Amino acid sequence: MILRARTILSLTAPPIEDGAVFIEGNRVRSVMPWKNLRPHVNVKTCDLGEVILLPGLINAHCHLDYTDMAGQLPPPKTFVDWIGLITAAKSGWSYSDYARSWLHGAHQLLKTGTTTVADIEAMPDLLPEVWDATPLRIFSFLEMTGIRSKRPPKEVLAAALAQIDLLKHPRHRAMLSPHAPYSTLPELLRLTAKTANKRRWQTCIHVAESMEEFAMFQNAEGKMHDWLARNERDNSDCGLGSPVAHLARQKLLGENVLAIHVNCLARGDASLLGKNKTHVVHCPRSHDYFRHPKFEREKLVKAGVNLCLGTDSLATTRKVGKAKPELDMFAEMRALANSDKSISAEEILRMATVNGARALGLAGKAGELSKNAFADLIALPYTGKNSRAYDAVLAHTGNVTASMIAGRWVIPPQS
Ligand SMILES: [Zn+2]
Image (cartoon, rainbow, N blue to C red; front, top):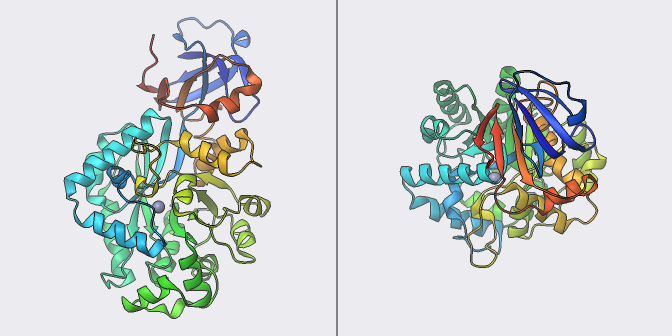
């Protein structure tokens, strides 16, 4: 199949005006200007017309199962207050509430141009059913904690691995996510790192999300430290350095690790992440919800860190006006552009495509339109010039006009 479009953003080369993408099966075979295309006999051409064609977006951090909490939790005073709010909200939910919510989230992402998502699964029992019900590519990271349940780290890991063994799907993958430094014991982080390295899995962890978490590890003090001490967490791992330094001590930094949030950095943390090739996922709307300290984007980029974008969950997204927020990577890209005037539209789109792919071990396979990449692509209405195409992507609101995953239309273009 050949797709023709007014503008193509391949992310590996400058924008192509009046371009063509040649697709064979589930892969891209070539991307070029329409006029360079040698006449192919018997190849179906689909002229998408006045659109920008670009790779499907990669959401590097999400909690699909919290989607229906959209707008329910008003921004709290402190992060620890929020943990109380979400714990209370979750206690009232049934299995089917979570399943419905997960599927609503997948649908919201699909219609707004995401084709691959790294999702944290608090309810992994849902997965066989919900995986079958979405065309998205899902990386499901099974959330592990163990503080409140007082389960030994070995047992927590064994239970997650037993669940992963039961999950097999041609398009989706299941892997491990220790929730955060404060909600786990160091042994669980070490065991996860070992397992992920041995099995060549990606893994992800929330880290240095709040000032309370930072104070807990850096200085063994503050609201989170004291609250967890009251809950009988063994806090002997606190007071030894920052949350990022804590991960380094447990050997949970590396090319296969996605560090989520990283809002609070100590001196040396950025270079620790950079040297260990750890990826960082920024979630702009969640960041704004909590009013965290400024995200240190430039410091991380300077240290050589690969930065990606995620939506996080709708439980941590502000309601703007009357409408409930929805999961939408375009809204995240715009939120980043609004909060950081020093970043270009092209860089932001790279965070939402190629960088996310790299973090998930999909470099050259997703997040770009190039030879042998997955035929995962989306189209947005556009009548402007090539030179404004990246800005137009950032300005796009609403649904995409077409979406293809693995060479199949999941949102067919209107003919
Ligand atoms: Zn999260």
